[in-house]
Image (cartoon, rainbow, N blue to C red; front, side, top):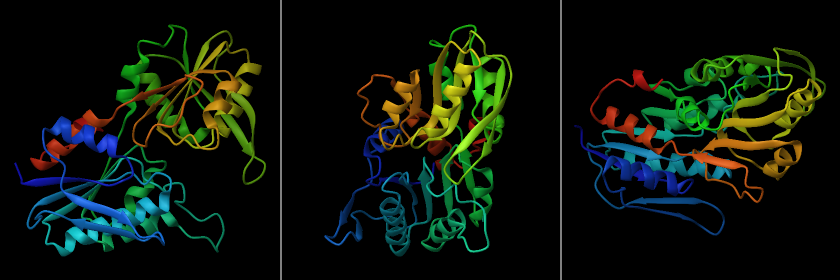
Length: 309
């Protein structure tokens, strides 16, 4: 086994603590601070010379602060002669900006990947990217794990026999198919038309949902607007009840309240980002710490991650 150290950034300390506990190691010693003007400061408090370094830092809100902290952490380790630097980024911010919709727009998913490489990061590990092509933006090894098996295991005890898996749009059909296959449930797809930059309209539904429980899936939930639209359309089609499952539960701007008010009974998310406040009691958080710990254990032994994809 290669000699390695796992450092925890400030974005999700609870997840980092669970991962190192599962690995049976102590977290690396480091000081992470911010100056009064917001600048990030990282001091590595133990030797990393020649070692494999794993930086566990999801780039969740505030995204810019956590991205910059990851870059500073990597630079500190690079300058301290670390052997290889692995960024373990359970939630990869800026992944939605993977292409230009006009000629005067930035592709920030690519920009962040290049910044990570420039800071000294040799390898990236993440979960359920919003778009797969982000892998190609990083000029080095890039492994995308999936939390779908973990979520399906949690869903298995609460999913009625008549449930149907629903993709909220055409872009999530592949993900929905994976859920449907693992859960042995039928699949339905909502098709939408974009009316403005922030508003879409459901145009038609493919699949049978009348009288059934609908499990609406997504890779991430930000404000919940897309899911609320999906619930409205499915209710009009005769659906009886609603569950939601997503890997990354950002749940911003009272998203939990909006989903509960729309009729969502259970919302399954993972701890790739810190859990939000749940005053309505509908959120179920499923930990991906065992998955990440297993991946890191394989990497420290230079073994394949194929079984985790």
